[in-house]
Length: 120
Image (cartoon, rainbow, N blue to C red; front, side, top):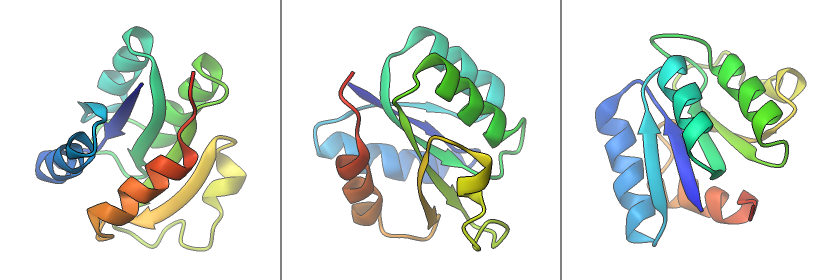
């Protein structure tokens, strides 16, 4: 199964991708809502790492589409802002399973992916 990383910052996406690939995961990346939706139409993913603030498009639209297409797939939301730091992201996205800062160590992200991965 693969992990979909949706992150507008290509350097950060590559950092996470390389770390997850070293742990034996197949990882695909997208930078925008449009790219993420296209990936979800062609790839079976087991978990999504999704930045709350995308440069192009809406992260919540990606999460909603993922919930429709793959009802059991969980979303790990990441953000560099404090906008959802109160935990309200869980009220807006039924498939949200975690919310961490983009500054979290890649090992923490990998642990969350391991914990919440759904085997389709």
